Length: 225
Image (tube, rainbow, N blue to C red; front, top):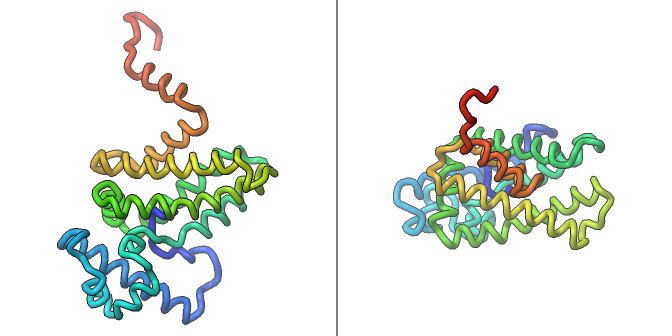
C-alpha cells in the first residue's frame, strides 16, 4: 500500500530464489540507509550519493531500484499481497469486512519493520511536498489493483465509473488517514484510526456525527445507563 514498506514477499509463499533474495537484500539496504540518513540530517540534506555510499552500492544501482528519492521512502511490496488477500476472502463476506481484515493485516506487517519507520514515512508525507505528491501518484497503482478486486467480487466492470470512483475514494481516504495520524503526532493507535476511516466510507458522515453527538451529549440525571 504505498505507504508502508519492507518486503513481506514472503511470509506466505515459497522461498524466493537466490537472485530475488539478493535483489530484496539490496532494496532493504538502500531503504535502511535512507531512513538512517534522513533521521540524522533531514530529508533535503540527504543525497542519492550519500545513500549509495551508506548502502555500499553505486548511485546507478540506487536509481535502478528506485527512480527517485521519494520512491525509496514510499515504495513497498504489499500491493500483490493485498490483492491476493482480498481474493482469498470468502465470496459471501461483506465487502467492508474483507477490507478491514486486509488493512489490519497490512498494518501488522508494517509494524514488523518497526513503528519508527512508519512514523518517519508518514511524517515526511506531511512535511515534504515532493513526498506527498509522489505518494498521490503511487496510490493510483493501488487504486487499479483495488478496482480489479472489486470487479471480481461484485461482477461490475473494473473500468466502470462506479468502481473507479469507489476505489479512489477509498485510496484517497487512506492517504488522508495517514496524514491525519502524522499531523496528530502519531498519538492515536493507527489501526483504530484506519477503522474510523473505513466506518466513514461504509456509513457516511451520519454515523460519525451520531457517535460524536453521543459522546458529547451528557445523559440527564437519573437516566438509566
